[in-house]
Image (cartoon, rainbow, N blue to C red):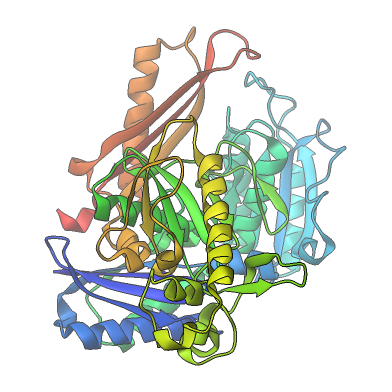
Length: 520
C-alpha cells in the first residue's frame, strides 16, 4: 500500500509517494503555474511516472492546498451567502461585516439580527425568534442563496439557538443548503467567530471544486482506489466531506504540513521549524509532535477571525528573493521574488536577476544550476546579502521563542539551501533527508484529529467527571473526522480558569488524534 502526498506552494507543487513502512519511495518538485490544477496534476503525473508503482496500490491521497486562502485574499470564487445573527437587541449596535472592506462585503446577499442568544453564564438574553428566522430564510431562498452563516451570542457556552436556526433553515431552504454554525468553527468573541463563520460559508463552492477536482484528476491519472483526504491547519487530515463542511480549516495548512513533515524526518517532537520556499520563509513551533496554535486573533485577507490557526511567522525571504545593491551601498534581499520563474530568471539558470539562490551558490553553500554564472557576483556584495538573510532569520527565530534558551532548529523546504547553519540562539540546526519535500511528507503521514472546546463550571460538574466527558467527546470528534477509534489518543489539554465568570468556570480545550481508519 502506498500513500500519495501533495502540497501546493506559491513556487512549487511538491509530491511524495510513501510505502507501508513510511519510507519515501519517490519525490518530485513541479513548478506551480498560474493554473493550480495544472501544477497539482503535473506533480502527480511526474511522481507516478518516476516511481513506476502499481497505481492500484495507492490507497490514500492527501492534498494540502492554498485554494481557500487565495479565494479570500484575491476575492475570487466566493459564494453569495445569507447571514443570520441571533442576539437582538443586545448586539444590534454592531452589524455583521462592519469592519470588512467593501470588495469582500459584496458576498452578503443579506443579513438579519433576530431575538435570542445567551449571557456569559448561559442564561437566555431573550427567547429565540423563530418567526423572524423563517422570514429571513424565505427571503434568502427567493434570492437563490445556497449558503447560510449562523452566529449567536455566547454560542460557545450554549448552542441550542444556533442548532434550532439550522433546523429551520433546512426546513425552509431544503437539504441542499450549506449551513455554517459559529459554535463549530470559532472560539469566544462574537464578531471574530462570526467573521470566521461567514468566510466558511462563502468558501463552499471553492471546497467542492478542489475536492471533486482532485478526486477526478487522480482517477484520470489511473489512481482509482485511493481515498482522498485534505490537510487542515492543525497538522492533521480530514475527509472530503469534512473539508466541504469546514473549508476554512484548510487555511494555512501548508506551514503545518511542513512542521509535521520536519518533525517526522528529524525525529524531533519539540523544535522550531524553518520552512524556506521560493518566495517566503515560514517559521513555526513543533510541540509534542504537533504545531503550536496561535493564541491571538488572526487576520485573513483583511478579516479578523478567531478560529484555530498555527502560530506561524512569515518573512519575505526565499530562494527566489531578489537581491539588490542600492546607490547608498545598502544590500537588500526581497521581499519580492521571481517565484516559480526562478529556473528562468535566476543568474545560475541563465537569467538576469540576482536572487538569494545565486548568493548561496556564489558563497559555496549550494550547487544549483550553472555555478559559473554566479562567479561574477562581487564577494563583498554576496557576504552583505548573506548577512542580511542571516539577520532576517535570526530575528524571526527570536520572535518564535518563549524563552532565551537555545532551541533546536529544523531546516526544510527547497529554499533552505540559502540559510547558514550557524544561527545565533540555536542549540542545533538540522537539515534532514528529503528536506525539500517536507510539506508533502507532512501531508502524507498526518493523523486525524478532533477538538472539544467548552466552558465548564466545576461547581456544577466535578472536575474529574467533566474532563472525562470532554475527553470522550474529543475522541468522538476525531472518529467522526475519520480516525480509527483504537488508535485515538488525547494529545493536548488546556484547562484555563476564567476569573470574570461566576462560580468556578474554566475554558476546557482538548484535542485527540489517531491514525486514518482505513490504515488499521
